[in-house]
Length: 296
Length: 221
Image (cartoon, rainbow over all chains, first blue to last red; front, side):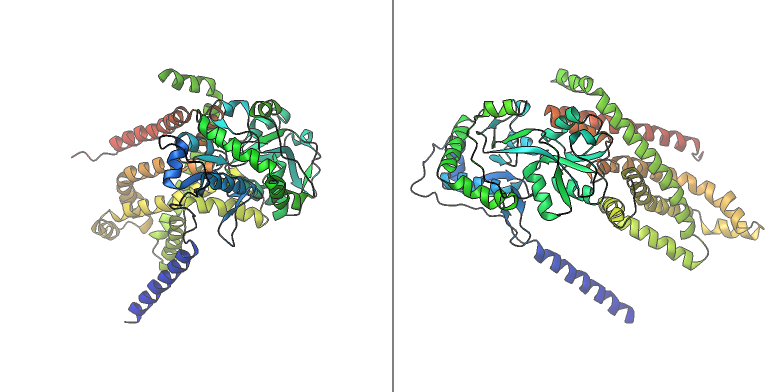
């Protein structure tokens, strides 16, 4: 009898634990059929945009761990950031609801190819190799490649990275860039930048190299880190679109150019980037081709 | 298409082969740890003292019930944050080895229990000591029954080693190198096809070795 009671108590405790965990991961995706507003352009049913309007949802791949561009706010459980604002603008212009899914550096191009995502807004640099694989919008932001180290590090720039552990994301442009600029660095290639943050905090690597905005996001989370050295590269960000979908590229460009001209761009910049760096910026006005040249 | 398949391999042979050897090294070291620790834990599990049995039981339950990925996080990020300067290699092989050891211990224990109690009693009554009984009567028979399960565990361990490369440890093993090739060439099917071939070479070799052992220790009926 005594033994039985313990068994029930155990089961009850396990059940309670499950209930607590279960409540923690409630439904967190926005989506569902939205009704297109009257003032949006309607697209014919056979096209990609027409299909999106019919379904009422556009699926947009963003980063979940890269403040201030795309990150999941642990309090509200919503994805926020510069890329998310842009995605919202595209969805609004189509009169549909955005559904944000997580796209890491390594899977975002496959996501476009297999149709998992309609649009990718995940701090993606426009470069020559990628232009052969997917379509790009005009650049909506230009980031700069930098090196992040701990406050007490003696690394002063990319030249000091030889023999040091350096973290960056698998499938990012830095994998190639670092091989060129710091051939003797020991690269740790991980799936997401939050892993790089963990690795530099626990001392497994001595530096992280990627776009300044992503690194700034890490400093926001841990102020014992700092940026060093000159900029390694310029990284024009573009929205990724399935290869050959000219209608979608034109449409996104239209939305972006309105966004850049009507004052929404500087507002978003201030809200997500300027607030932390104290800088002001103008929206980029270059084309995809000029963007590719910047990265060469 | 078949041409593209061969191109991906010949263009990235150095990546694939370095990844293959990293995986081989991971697997060999982890296998040694798994067998040594597994045997020790199995010895605890069948020891005459109930306290030692319980100790072995705790080991098995802990390492068998924690997912390998969680073990990797604890042994690397966790211990490093705790101030222990552990390398990704040590954390990876130790986690995979200790994790597999729990399964090895259970396989060995069930092998020992497969030898009938009557044989042990007969052996003891004939004047063999407990140690002699174990060494001369029980273990030779137990070994024969555990060859096949140990082979399955080794194959599972080879496949589990792929988790080390995709985890925070980011060791450049076969799967990691395939993913690097994939991210550079965008040729997903081709890159992972060759990774699968690499794992198949390893598991195939183990399968052959197991068959050979089984044949050698076969009971002639």
